[in-house]
Image (cartoon, rainbow, N blue to C red; front, side):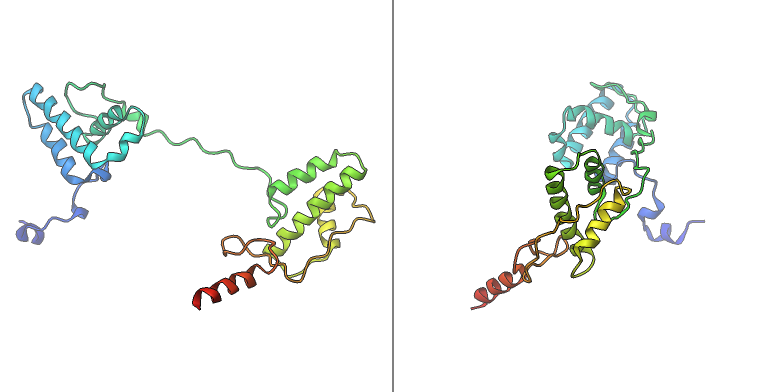
Length: 221
């Protein structure tokens, strides 16, 4: 007995087979299926070349790829389920080569101790461990602490004590780094505005939000 959809002549994608290359649409798939009904091998091969030309028109960006003609013929075979007896300029690819699982990317084994600083800060601190004590190391610690303070203010609070940053450096170095007692960071201006990336305000620019508001007011006038 025919179903209700068959009686009405309705045909939904949910009732159709899975498409191997959905970017080319079902019409191309029907063309490929029609190739199997052509008994003459020479005509079948000619029609296969015509289908490849249609695929090229539907996917013009393929020209940006190296050896794009080879890729188009491979895709034709994929649409045909790797079962197409034709004379083509390229051999039929092996199906197993397209079903291999991707190679997993190696992940970092160790967790980031302080996510608001990032892993690069940890690497810098590890490098500073081997640096001999002296003026050079002190200036390097000053620059590092200044940058860490900026990152802290972006992601955490409106203010932070220098001692907190110094303690974080010592802790992240497993206390192999000791901050000199006479090390102090420059005071922050009250107009400095640290904002999270993507909010359209320059990080560390004094009065960044104020300047933007002034520009907007001038535009309204």
